[in-house]
Length: 313
Ligand code: SF4
Ligand code: F3S
Image 1 (cartoon, protein in one colour):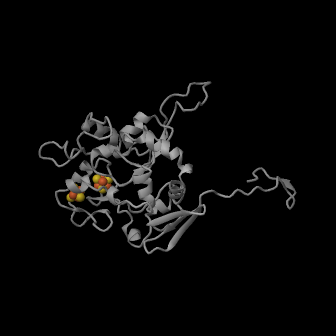
Image 2 (image 1 turned 90 degrees about the horizontal axis):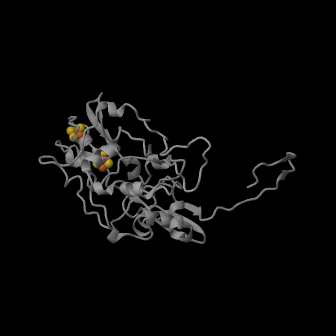
């Protein structure tokens, strides 16, 4: 987890690769710039850089710092002139993983059955090309074991139909893990397909790098669009506008409400009678969430305890 615009781990990870990548053509609907694979210098497979040890020394640098000052006597207005937001950052289990492409030992592989990218530590010799190549800096060299390590997408859980631990443990209920399909085979009854391919409110991080990362973010609504466009692509304003209207689209609202509702992976869902209902791979129901939470209003005065309530809903 880091906060933007000033948080980074390792230090400056994204500004450094963006700077190396240089100015690219982001105008219009179609990205016409180079991917990091196309921008690789002669003799290298991907444009990257290796962080220094010191870059890993301050994980909390810039944490929670907002952009803009708050002079004495000032007050907050809408839209905010100060802003920051949290960016939960994990391995993206990319469709075209630069870590995999960079490793001269072929120690990294992508599983055909679920797309999970794994690093075989028994093959690894600590060359760190994966650390250099991954633009998201999600392959880490372990100085004690002398081999690298990365997220395993909780594959034992996924193999048993459970969502990853980071998804299950998220008390903010902001994560949903499952399987998306390609745009030409998308299914309206797959909540992730609906959110990503149909409503198009969730976007990959720095798609211009060309790795097709498989973590999608719903962009924060209060951040200047120019900053978000560089991070999440040209269609951020439409994504935010659709997200703001989510309550008008029961299918979208239902898919969003399934976040954090079950530890199981939801393969299909439907919305009916004011409920979003999720099903696992076998078609068994694993989640049932009301689109509108009922509100119970209690009397202000509690007869039993002879006292007034400060919160009556
Ligand atoms: Fe590899 Fe990095 Fe993509 Fe993860 S985010 S699959 S470590 S390139
Ligand atoms: Fe390959 Fe990275 Fe190990 S480049 S050898 S997986 S340190």
